[in-house]
Image (cartoon, rainbow, N blue to C red):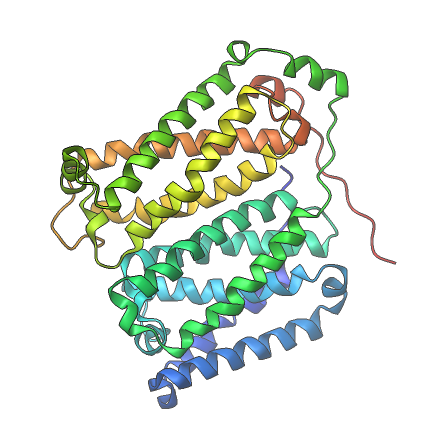
Length: 383
């Protein structure tokens, strides 16, 4: 995958979140929840106007440029929130976590702020840089789309259903455009042209004629997907209070944080069961019967969707900050290491498959690695 250079203008503009947040933290009018919401909306509106004035050419070429620029600013804000809650800095976003969105002070909220402030921030800069240089960014956009959607699917219902449901403030409604705009951007990313491939039609047909046993990488992935599907179903039944002894022992001995009253772990397991589990089945089918053109794109979306919750759950296990019923037993760490390794293998698989085009969904990794295309060519400038 050809990663474009980062957008320096967007990076400089997004760092304006530092003085803005520091100044707002000392404004007494922001001690009221409604004042926090109105001021946040005003700042985002002024930011959009500034971006439109400074980068009209890029926005006319691709409206996503404005979206990535605004979201890069909010990513820096999220990083400031996470650093402040971990006592690495003071005096920046305390007003917002107290009067705007207090649930960001939970362990789940802190780590999704880290993810948004680091991973999503780099993706925004890379995609904005690609737009500025008229290059392709479809692969990065699909990974960002999966990560962003998974974060929203867990975070918003967790806020409404968990113990922070009584702490919903007016700033919560700012998430409405924060959800609608990425949906629009995701549809546009899917509609972009796929990157070219150097593989001929005969080469693809030759590899797809091979049986599953002749494709050991695909066979290993199919086995992993089946096992991961059963494990995902089991964890979904656990959070649904399945009365069997196995579920009772598991939730008390291995993953006690699933009983946490903040509801994020329960919502996460249900999202896995209702969305990830069907994909496991479809992906296994596509690997057994190669040639499914949808697999590379959706596998990349799925890689982003799985990478985000793993990063928000795994780091809090050793600290115990997510637990309210005691410490976590050591075996729970080992149960999820295969999931993390499987997601890494899936991501590597997706990276090679997407780089070579949709018709190579059934190619084994060694064959794909030998057929990697040259870096993406520069797109023509607009007239």
